[in-house]
Image (cartoon, rainbow over all chains, first blue to last red):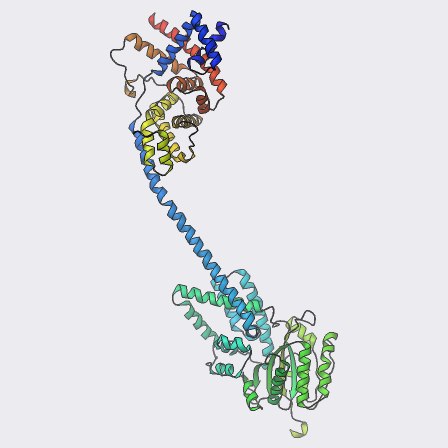
Length: 427
Length: 184
């Protein structure tokens, strides 16, 4: 190996970076070549002189600053963990609360499905303020849009139902929601219908001359108290609203209210027959809406009285019945059978055909006892003596937004039993 | 018994922050001098050294022990130096013999010739190209292996291998010239 090649390896050799074989070759050459050996000594000297260059002491500020920083970060390191954990706990608690509220909602909705479907149907059909108030409260409390939207639909259906009542008796049944609210849930759930005890409870309710102001007062009371209690009450109201909304699709309140007008010499007796027939058929108890007294004043929930004594001094009895078209026909048929006899049976039997032929008015029957008329609720709806059973499906469709098609199997019928005017010779 | 660097690092990784102070006290002079030779002035060197220790402390959990703590620290110092240069910092070479710089003065017994030679070595070192100076510092002052130098500077091993001899030959020529001119 020539000196030039050796000299290029001298630095690596003195730094101990050569492989074993090269190191031996270089070492042997250096022993034999004085020029290369002198160069190696010279380079070692320079390296040693560089390594021996004076060093400074590090200023104490470095260690102090680092120690300060380390201590500060050690302190801040202790705190972040609890903070993070606290946030995690808060998030977990919020999630738990949310789950709990959802469970309450689902449980209540489930309970309603099992036990008190009629209550919610009745609420959806009759009540004015619960839906309105709930909607109002929902808006105030900033409830989710999802909940608000169905509430508005419910409000619309409630308005429609209110129109029905208005048509029946020029005055809205303002007392009704209050009375329903006062009923114990068990009673409403068990029967799902209006019974004597319930009627008593409703009758015991104070006058509802100013339901809005009382409602407002109740709301004010609700707003008071501990925030947690208020929150619970709000959640409870929201749950009630959810129940109503969940029941709503099942309740044919909006589109399927159809009015049947029965003219009878004795509305009280006919209403008793209606109830009895419904019971025989296994239908839900017809829900008495009200009774029009002979003096003209509309007395709500007075139908029970007529059921007890079998006779009413009123001129009109109004019921709500949820059943199918066939069941309605059989119900009316049963009333007719009890009342007098045959002619009405044919009339009721033909009602289904009339329904299928849609919007086709045709006289179905006439009798001397009770006459049937399927019509829009109106003052004129009270049929004249011997009037035929009629259908006014066009009006029904316009007013309630529903038609023959797309109806639910069970629909809501408003049955008005009106006193037939006395014959002209008896006047 | 003195704890090794690895012991201190493991304690620090276990949450005992005070152990890192021990590492700082143990290595601060070496790190500071390297920073001083890189940066060329005491102020920047102190900043770089301090920041290097802080960075090391914050990243101590990432230290796996593949290299020595000092190698790791020198890599941090080098990165900080490069970063400061990118930000516009300018290396200002100061003689370590400056009385105000706190340099360790040679003993009075040293001959003038030796003192002259030492000054000459310092001068030729300062005159070196920056890249060459780093290699010489890391090799001859810090005593790193070629592989470690390559690791710290982020260059191939062969580059260090080839350049180290060339740099020494340059230093030899410059020193000869400087000493010869002074003797004249």
